[in-house]
Amino acid sequence: MVVTRFAPSPNGSLHLGHAYSAVVAHDIARERGGKFLLRIEDIDGVRSLPEKPDEFREDLAWLGLEWEEVPAQSTRLVNYEEVAQFLFHEGLLYPCTCTRAEIAALEPRLGPEGAIYPGTCKGQNFDPEKPVSLRLDVDKALARVGEVIWEDETNGVMVADPRVFGDVVLVRKDAPASYHLAATLDDAADGVTLVTRGQDLFAMTHIHRVLQELLGLPVPEYHHHPILLDETGQKLAKRRNSPSLAQRRKDGEDGRELAARLRAGEFPAGISLANA
Image (cartoon, rainbow, N blue to C red; front, side, top):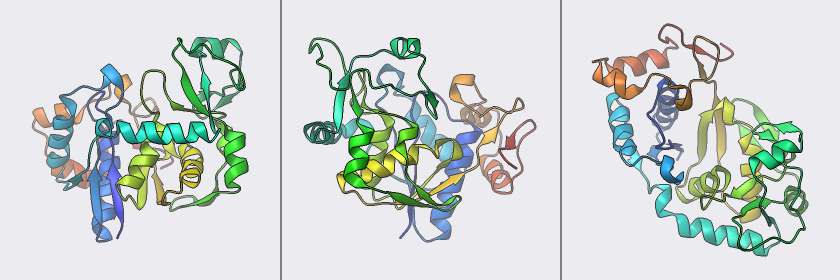
């Protein structure tokens, strides 16, 4: 049975891009006789707003979607810590005290997430009194798992190459896990068989597949859909104050009709589908 999920972070209101992603995941699950899950990814410290999950549920119901809810990330911290400690004791993680400013000052190469960490702290002693993040030693990880592939419904068979990111952070200084570690563990725990998400997150799969191999987790298939762009050609985003679904609800718009238009590729004025 196919199991998809929609996993928003409660650090702002949902917008049309989220609606499109939720509709895609929901419809694939329904068309294939499966389940559509809602998971709240709420471990972003003070940026996780406690009132937003209820708003998200109202948004999804307004769109006419049906879902099963699974435990939020904030209930899974022990699992993240245990897995991080396992990887650390296996010699696959190392502490890093570098700040973003310090990394930027080194003028590093750029990758899909910005600056590629040059490995400054690898093999170094560190002050236990200073806050540290834990980074994945990508070379060691690849040496252990060998070649890793994944099946992508929109891109075909892909070979994982996490070196495009460098040694990514798996445990943040200010949070028990990064998106990479938490999402990978949660998808396995929730029985997700098809990860549906925007094409802008496609590169993340290079890392997630390697983590799945390191940890012996089930391997889902992937479906990376096009993303919605605003009138300037930029991705819709919370940080850019893209119009919210909550405001559309308050303004009296018909959510089910909106979902139907999204399915048909009919978008509001100024909104377009990338690569359309």
